[in-house]
Image (tube, rainbow, N blue to C red; front, side, top):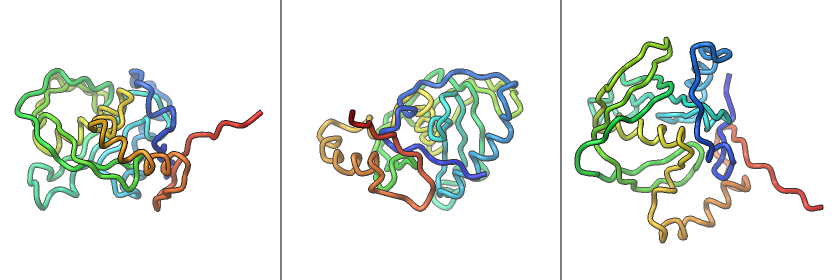
Length: 190
């Protein structure tokens, strides 16, 4: 089932996710729905906050990068209760986009190597697993969502000022992508 993607400005995107356990209601169905939504929206990652859930869960499938980045071949994973243990290497820029911020792509600086502890979809624990390059970048982007951070918040202030109008258009629903979006509720005047 396709889920609505929460649009920039929606309060759920600012919520830090809560850890879950293997008894989370219909977890397998949620994960399947998230993958279906991500593929339908042409994304490479999707966090629970982006489908209106304040939990520590995100998915990735880096296959669209395979031609230019062979390390992304068959890189499809589920991350539950993920924690980045450490980051290494010289920061590098790469252009990122986000399903919650349609139509905006910006260069973001991140570390190239991360070590993580997380549970997979079968609730198998993975301790201090290493990720590099594009997979590490996608993971960090989705991990940020679990911490209530949207990628445009990592931009310098002058860039945020330049994007203010476009971001307001996304929040108000004027910038509509081809996939289903959940917009923030408008405040009613009394």
